Image 1 (spheres, one colour):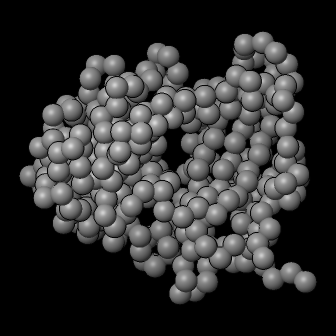
Image 2 (cartoon, one colour; image 1 turned 60 degrees about the vertical axis):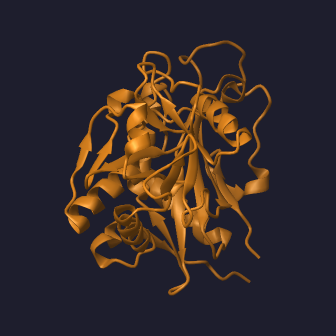
Length: 310
């Protein structure tokens, strides 16, 4: 029976013991940054493959700089702790690992300086986030993506996800699976937690980071795989909302979403309303890579095997 563990206040403890006080600054003001790391279960060799762990912690380090958070452990140590948590927890299924660095002082007052920081890492089982087989039905949100002049979107700040929650809730209450947010200028930015790619005339196109896009690790993976395996380069440029309606294919990428086809936008079918051929090819390559099945990309994967304890 799996028992989830967490790294909390410098020790690995059962997850149920990882608690914070109600006065914790991050709880009151959203002054924390986080990452999401996928552990992908490979049934063939009974192994969980942690995907691009180091890159996630490098991005966490960058987020900490933006929010003036102290990351007390180095990246090597954080990778070791993550592997330890996964192996001790004993899951034999897909999992999600959440590292989070937060302002841990129990103080009231809006600021970033003069506050203590702490790190927590926890694990939870995590199945499909969106329907990868059928594809997602998306809605262009009335909520605009936050701007870099407000809250920097290239940092994964916990508080920024209120923006995502508003958009996602609006989409789902209107019968859609996911939201697509525009930036303040009206150009396509991203989903509530995903990067967006469109395909037109065999070309893959994605918004620029300056369109208030989080520079996604899964997105970078898709770009590299498309280039190396399909010979298709990805172009970064502004995308208008109307281009979503005439795209041949659309897909989303993210730690939670993996690589998910988009089959409908604002009740308009994308292509023939089914996952397109380029997206389908790229998806098959992607899932082999993240499960450690492709030797060319094994360097992206850290194997974790359940420890048998008595």
